[in-house]
Image (cartoon, rainbow, N blue to C red):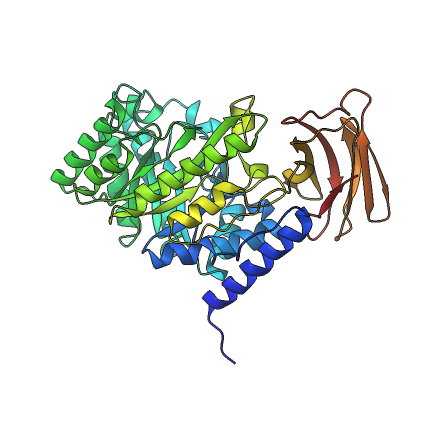
Length: 453
């Protein structure tokens, strides 16, 4: 019997959803929606996620492949990653992500060719004439875009060129080459792959303001000059409850210039700990952004900047903030996930906690390398409280804990048990505590189901 990839994804999504409910052990849910990628495709849109190549195993890989139609390498294609030493290239993680996308019928959004940050020290510490700097940039763009010609369909060519007031950001590129570096970068990228869609990408340009207007004026000027520019990326790193009221209007005005628009790095951060009210507001924010894109024909889609809280940049960049993505640290869909599905035409099926509240534990991998990884478990309570706690799980691929902090952990064979330290056993209603650990792994690192004892 011949079965379509869409049907297989829908079946897998239903199985993942059912497993999530069994693991969570809380409440009931309505029938699962089709995967987000299929809901988006039915609307003529693409739903994507940023990914970390080293995490593409186990549940992380399953969700990535099933739910999303586009992948953005979070760091793997930035200059400092691919050419850490001049003339010495490392394409391993970028190649891994591209291969994963090809195997799962996904687009790849290349990110990013020209940026002021995450450049190699040999470049930023060098002393270059304008001609030398221009040649370095041209060669870098040609090398990277050329390597992935026909495999990367969209490039964030220039990233974050503006200050908040709409003036050009002082960078190695602007200071050394003037504003013309943007047109040159687009032209060089087009020469390397004429079929790739080329974007300028920036943050705090979601609503109509001085910065987005500067971007609008630049794109209009580039179009008038005949420079190859296909789209504008609105990053949308948002704060809870602060979706700009002019978002859809802003998307439309860029579309009216004759370019595509994409929401490229969506997350909605909140002050921790998360609670039901914050998660409900976050869901409304994700739905509002997705709906604004859906309403404009030339808005091609939405990419979330990491789909799980365990792979989010927010906590390390904004201390005290987090829980910014549609999935929690244990890969369980949050209300935000269901809100995205609803904005894309799904039923918005949700799972609800049982009456009287509950406490739960969420396991996440926060960092991974060859042979080892760092994990974190968060114990949270809503409508309940704890005076002490113990978390248990069973590893399925031979992982072994080597060190733990903020908890006492023991492992016997595959079974792990971690109990609170003397100072963090109490978890109040609406509160949470976390503990972390280092562990070894080999071959694969699937996320285990955890139970709170």
